[in-house]
Length: 548
Image (cartoon, rainbow, N blue to C red; front, side):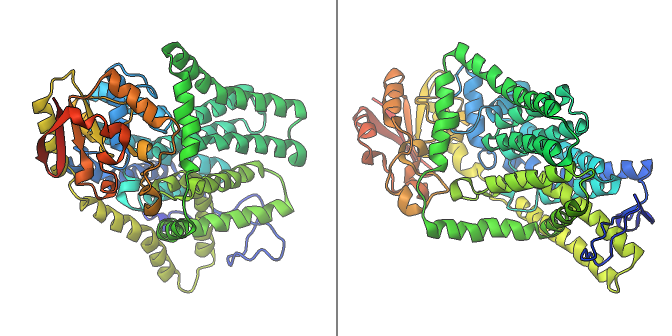
């Protein structure tokens, strides 16, 4: 099936748009394809799922299933601690919301500890589901072809960046599905503003927030749309807007309050507040430098934008088209406002902390793909109705702009370094020298040594970056200071150590270049304990100490 030539053109709703895209005449027009047939619809579904499976195939390779990708070792270590009876944010800590830890714990409970292949299969399902929901939203706000292009665009470009960022089962992957579903639920009742649908929409945002904190901004997007429908569209009364808004807020609060009550019963509610909110804010607000920000703005953010250039071109084109449409008619404009606001606020969250990790950008893709799909569908219809003199060349360029980034990054994924060679001998030595009930302490940021050895943490710190402030996305001169951004972190460390001193210390600063500025002897609290330990072995550069 040739999607570029899948149907004839027709003009819907009495609207006509110039093939050149010139809107200066003031006429609001839209050229669209004929309705999609069932056979075509089934093929689109197959294409979307196939693209996701193919582009995520590297995540099923043994080399990427024996160690995990970006941040997966953090999630797996805390998940293992949960399965061992630990309490999140009390016996194992990090600044992510708890949802991602429970997802990993659930997979490990069903498929076995450290089963990253099972996690990656779940990620394939989630990404494919997100692409199909993106397609459904596009079909609802425009037509089936716009939805199809949006779904295909998401399936392709969610993988069009560095594999470590796009292929990991990270928070953005799971949060995107919930946020897309929340928008679909909101649109399901946009005219009548039914409380039940609004509650569901808010609950989905609440669940997404328990996976990734910035997801909460989508509540503001939906509330703003309700106010817009009341004040400008005049399609909703104040009473209906208040009712619908209360449903969104109540739904948003429900999952968060439910988990808070659970933590209250566990006795770690305050710890959860500290780590998932207060300390997370301190982390993103931690000091950086202007040169560092500018460097990452170019080397990461701009690079992502260029890799997704085709999507951004048509997405921005649709934003402009929607804005001009609103100047002529407000009929049916609520979905357009919703999508543009969703894109805008999600884009702004990329700038949180001014570090621009590649995976932060992934949450922009659902609204961007929907908008781009709408513009691209219209672009295809226009050029078939009034063929561009160089249409064959244009079509080749479009295919290349989508295919080249996807193929390049897919190729890179197959050549990712095999991370298993360095740490497995260390794990084997840990297992050899300890009993299953013994505790260990890893100095540095190598949490996979905990989870793969099956030994619990002697302190709550999954990574020692919280003790010394050596976060990956900070300027090297600031990391070298060795100053924690978490108040009271060393007091927590000391209390944990004295409660259950480790049998082994594994010092990774002796082989990890990022930690060479942070030898254990540099920090008085830790240095005081070293007299009770002797060097037992050096494995692949890591120094292992045993308690006397």
